[in-house]
Length: 259
Image 1 (tube, rainbow, N blue to C red):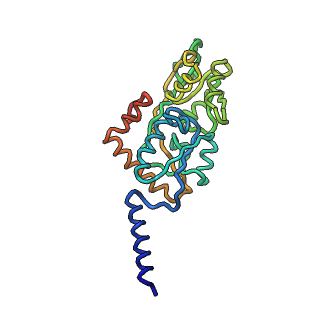
Image 2 (spheres, one colour; image 1 turned 90 degrees about the vertical axis):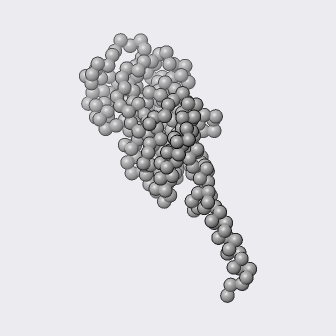
Image 3 (cartoon, rainbow, N blue to C red; image 1 turned 120 degrees about the vertical axis):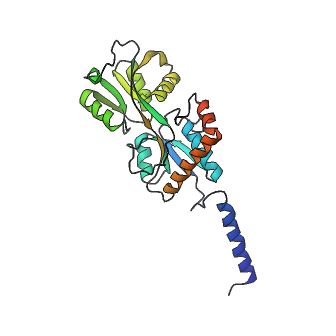
């Protein structure tokens, strides 16, 4: 039979749950949300730095006021997808839908990628049409999605050279600069950011832009809270855009709102 003390204790505990719920949904544990990706700056840069990447900053601006704690880790892309699919991570930054069609995607993207084709600045080669690619070696990154149409074109026309590991873009840029491959395909902003960091910018030219595609913070299919987080992120983007905070974040990276 409950005592007055036990009734009071239950009331206090319930009040605590309600208070916690006021700042966001009650989580099954107090573990932070952990998102991962390979470094793809300015989308996601060095963890713990003053500029960790615009997608990292946007995610934190949405989730932390809701009571979530957000942690970001870097790992190679293939493992980021695998471990997130298994539920070790809550999501991945910078994903195209083709990267992981089984993941949970918010209604709204958290950025956009322009897929560019880069060559050495001293190369006389020019992109005229698809036949220009015939027999050219192209640096790509293992397990990246480049879009079905482009991937079909590359398989048909080029000699793909896939790079994995922890710094695949660095290696592809060095190979391009050294003449070991003819071309590199990469997001335009990502490529120039990396080339600037490596002091190689003047050695390359943008030869062609293939497409523009949406990129997302894609959530683990193994996590029960992923569908809820997807809605929180989509609604939060609207709120950040209305307040002007997205513009402030993107300006820090020399970019404009993608919408």
